Length: 488
RNA sequence: GCGGCUGUAGCUCAGUGGUAGAGCACUACCUUGCCAAGGUAGCUGUCGUCGGUUCAAAUCCGAUCAGCCGCUCCA
Image (cartoon, rainbow, N blue to C red; front, side, top):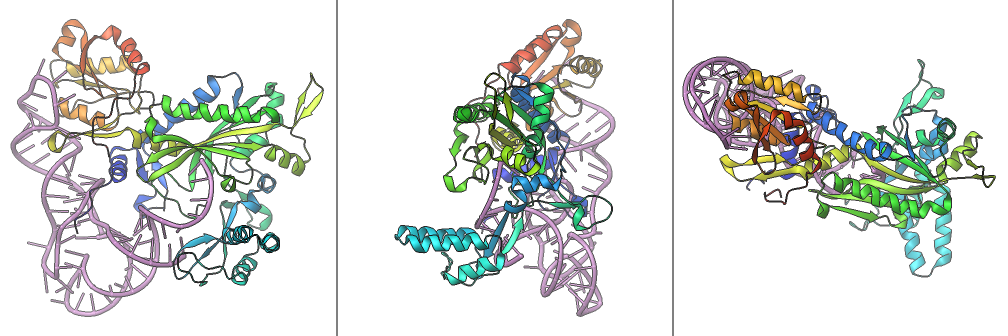
């Protein structure tokens, strides 16, 4: 059997390691499953993603402020939010078909069948029994056996025991590891925002509607991580909780979906590979009344980059009840306390960076003439300008160093003087550097350099004095080139 | 966790019991005057790990670790 050609994902993973975007974590010890370290170029890419998000969500607006809350909060936070009880899944395997299911979903399907056959009383009875055993593994299994639920694939009832997969990482706070010291690593940054609602309102005197934005690491003990950095157990989130009056929630829900969808387009993501998908009622998280996902068409299929959810007043209400501290906003004009609704755009930072990598990846030509190029938007490219002396003589390296130093305060720069000029261009193409400058003999004579553009490979002669302005202008006017390469 | 596939140089991979290899990449020097040029020299490996069989193991056997795909979940 012929070996399959390396897929686009394989090539990107390989490029990421070779050029320093993403390394497998703990590699010298044999690796740590589904964990990755971001290398020198990757950390720049991720930083650009976060900067672009913060710029658009905080700096470009008057109604959103930032926050950086702790990863380890009181365990009470996660009890109140429902994560301790609800953020785990009862899973069961069928030994014959090797398929895995959520035990409660199997039973819910059975209830649905009863409903369809108009056996309402049976459905209700089963629902009641399900509610009674929802957090009891043995009870769930017994219920599945009692109801003679068969695996739709194998048709057998050869089930394993039900096991709980809690998605939160536990840790211990303090020197003595006993049950009183158990704490959790946050599974989302959002709760840190909710519990600081009063603090932020008091400190900033913000009025509804307003938002609180936060970027930071979250941790979920995923049963099945995978697809490179797409789903990892440690990941970085970019979340914003937008608080508004309950009656305005639907319009803000729509507003933020549009806003967030547009953000990806503005950073150059291929429109045909981006879509909004509305969640069906039964796939909503326990806190949401509605959710729309921004999805990208990866080589492995459409996958979620960001969820824009209507979290209603669920979280503030839960924390108010559990803590005894009312998390409401006082409307002085109408002399009333408002329990705000929350619209939450929650994006995955690593996923977004990976989207830009995948979407930017392009190959042109074949064999010796092949060019691999990352067509990043100039605003997210790890390096903006690379400076080359055409040859290593006649004062060119010194002149190049001088120009690189001139540009350094304005752009992310790099300098390379080894190997042929063509090879240096290609090396920069491969890491998505949008501009290359070449210093030649004329530079020393008349103070001009060759500015070479990544996507079109066109060269223009630019005076050193005009460089900063010309590069700025090119960055701002950049638009995604029509696809010409065979990137599939 | 279960099943299938996989693990040899930085990357892609060849190597079915007898001295660890290729291409690309990388480093130095020479050459080089605008798109992966050429020459010379050089570096790179506990063959994932541990154990077993054997005179001899990258190769056969066992275990283990890690990766990929699928099942469930989500940013």
